[in-house]
Length: 419
Image 1 (spheres, rainbow, N blue to C red):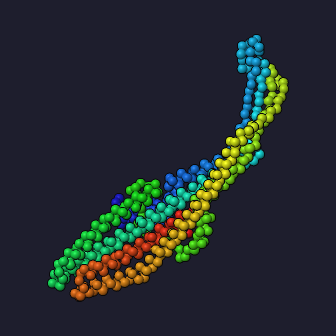
Image 2 (image 1 turned 90 degrees about the vertical axis):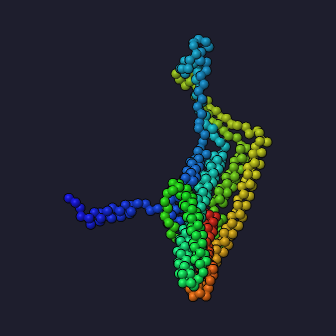
Image 3 (image 1 turned 180 degrees about the horizontal axis):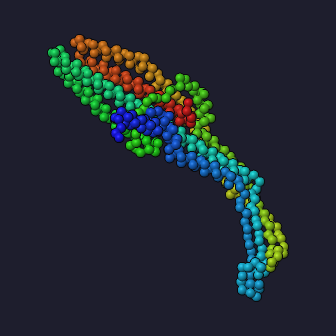
């Protein structure tokens, strides 16, 4: 039985809707969608996360006791030449079993565990720093992706506007009101923008490739069109952000952990002045019975004082170097933060001036020039110049908005967290 055409169409639409509903949305419409995809799929993020987990697993073994040692000694295995050599403990002269347990000097195990903990904190800091770097890169690429997409749209609108101006010029030329040069100028202007459009489309494609690389996706995979930018905080307090920088920056966290590890390494170097012990118990087997027991105490003798003093001085210098590195990094990061804040405010001011003054003035100039040209009071060159002014003003507005996003990404990279 043949289905009615209306029912077939309805079923096809229903299946299409269900497929669209079940399909996972493409990343790219917002920077948040890209960050979510990167957090899940980025191999760089996964690598440092696994390294941090591996470093945490080294903490417990670092402070554990060394494995005990079992020694078996078979003595007089030929019974003074009365038998062939044997490894049977019941047939040798005697067999000695020695069980030994090394015991590091008091406090050494805790210090080794603390050093391993500091190294695990550094690994965690590297994981956080890598994510901050990946997130900052994605935010910057998205700002450029959005800017290029908006510029493409603006260029297409200007090409259409130039086509209308060309039609106006041709109509005036046909009526004997304008020179043929006006129509030729409009055609040249449109050709130049067509060439510019090709370059923008190529750049847009390259940005898609870069974003896909950050997400570990195929280079030609589709991305959603950039829809909107993140909201810029209305007011950013430099002193508050500097405090947040000191508290949250992943690189500073790494250096803080390195200083802590250097302090524990220095304490361990001084603790190596004292000997480590080995305790042992040794039963003696003769025939089929245990005939005697022995106790053993062994210690190393820390006589190489020159070597130990060099190790202690090395640990002191390493601690001083770690402290100086942390201090220098803090000053540099604070300088970068203040520069980024200044650049953000500059871009914000540029956007405000462009939006409230430059763009309205350019639009008014264009409308006036268009009316003047249609009335024969303004030449075509003046009209094209007015068109360029309004286009440049709109591009300046887009660039100021994208610049703010770039500066915001820098600030959040330094803080190690989103604002």
